Image (tube, rainbow, N blue to C red; front, side, top):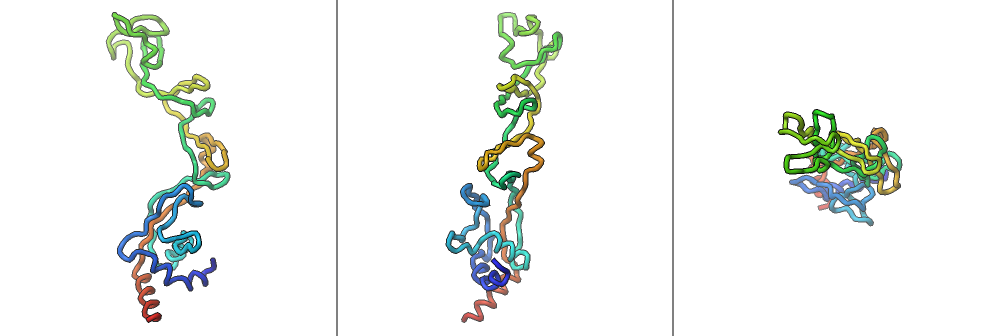
Length: 203
């Protein structure tokens, strides 16, 4: 769409904007951009994002930041499934657990690996009964375990799979993820005057 065509449609585009409120995006996974603006139809996309951007560039509308979408670096789809992955093998088959650390033998593992007996918890590595918390053992917090390679780590990496093209990205590949800012739009005084001028010419 050329600037001249946009200018010819200016009254219609401006009239589709709410005069007293923000025009908010509607999130929709089936939309090519991941969202659309109310009032647009497939046959007559008056409120196409490109037209709204043109209005903002010309001062007829004001952008209001709403959110930022992550896009696949391969196909630019917004359908990215972001998840935790194993830092060793890259698998997303990781589970979270609360760990115990036995100071005496250095074993760190899930609480369920310490067998509960009458005398207390028994360490699966050295087979000793644990004393009170803080004396010979403690919980270092939350850990993750990979069910693919059995690796264990406190902080997983972040990876993603594009649900459109199927590409997978590890944490290094995530640095190439593209971004698209999504805005709401508010009509400006200049836009209101343009509507009034167009209405006056038509009456």
